[in-house]
Image (tube, rainbow, N blue to C red; front, side):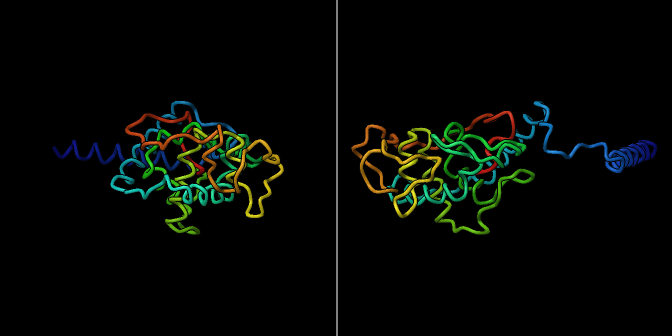
Length: 220
């Protein structure tokens, strides 16, 4: 028994020494230019997916279908999220091209998460990615508003996106166009008469696999 204990201790010490040597030689690549191997990215995505599920369990969302929630969330999204995630008809900005893992297109991936999970990610961020913890600058109410807007992205046309994210003065950004095809209504107000309405309320998603090849959601 004593020899087994000694063997375990020596083995652990040797492994620790090898790990230190590996770190000290600078062999590990910390550059953001080469992408993670697909196997590593899949594993990290799996870990993140289940961590978010565990920590977001029990979160109760407010009524996210209220038009005022979606309208306020649109302006927050444009200020906080659009530069990395883009939106319907709007590409991410240049800085997003150098991110590793990449910021996902939320119009395609957000429905894979429940509302509580989206809120948890937005509030707490994702470690070792470019997804910040917005709770340091924004209230929970503001972050739920972002979730309310993100919940609608998958059914949103570029015209509706441009209209909802228009500035308070009614002018839209250059990259979004003049919104002349966006239908009637004030900026930030849902238009029930528009043929491109953003669709019915979306129910929170259940258990899911990995959303993207890199860690799934990241830079919300």
